[in-house]
Picture 1: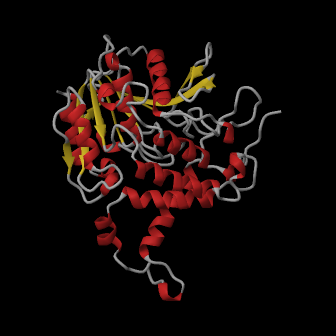
Picture 2: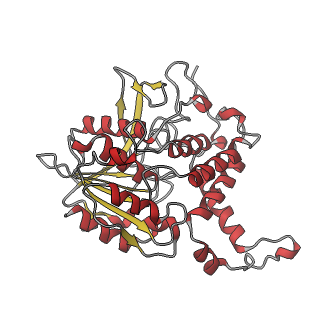
Picture 3: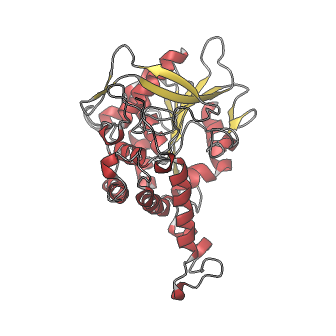
Length: 379
């Protein structure tokens, strides 16, 4: 008997939902993927999207990697199959900084995600039920192993460039360190070589909010009337504060009430409404288990693990590397990008994106990020 999901319990994309622009690849059917934590996964599905055309020599491919709550829809409108417009929409397309008249662009949904790639909401092949809380511990290194298998299926031996910010930047680094011969250019935005204590603490606290929701049920909520959306909303609210700068929040909201509400009489401040809005949006399009799995994967980010330390690991990089940070990023501060640039053999100075928007500037400052991408791709 097939498992029956209750759609009220998760915002995950599920088999049978509109495909939109997704394509799918079946990987690790002959032999399971051995994970860094000791477990394994077999029959992995990857959802991905592409733009542009691969040239005859297969030398013009660019891999674009999304952040925590992103997906394969980096470019294109919202609509059937896609709840939101592409997260790097202005930066990809004909004549755009990532110019699809010249490049073949690939963006996969990450392993552990919830938008078509194998993750906690996917059916486990051994018993016909969702992985749910049984989904194994994964790391950015495991996620890159899946992306490399996708590249093999697509016939891409070497990427013209691999680019991404935040969690996507972590995987760019893992590509450049772990598969140096397959990356000609690496574009790393707003991340570091490892997860800091503060980043681990913040992610773990967000996960605690989800797992503390009575509807979490150890992750087994997909057939229940409700999932842990309340916990997911709290997690997103906490994350959203760290994604923006204190000054940006101050200038935008200060102590203003929400519309005509009166905080002294039980009404909300405008910042409270803003955070609730972002929490509601995420709960409608994302899965709480994926949030936990991917946040933990980010906590395990450390390019030096098992490679003799960070300096030895980064010394392996052969790609022309562009490192960029954001002037007001309090989640991935500039000191982390400066450390990367100092240790990478082929990196220039850190490109600083001036912005009041904090960490989210890698998504919002399209003009500055676009200039950076264009320069890096044509180096």
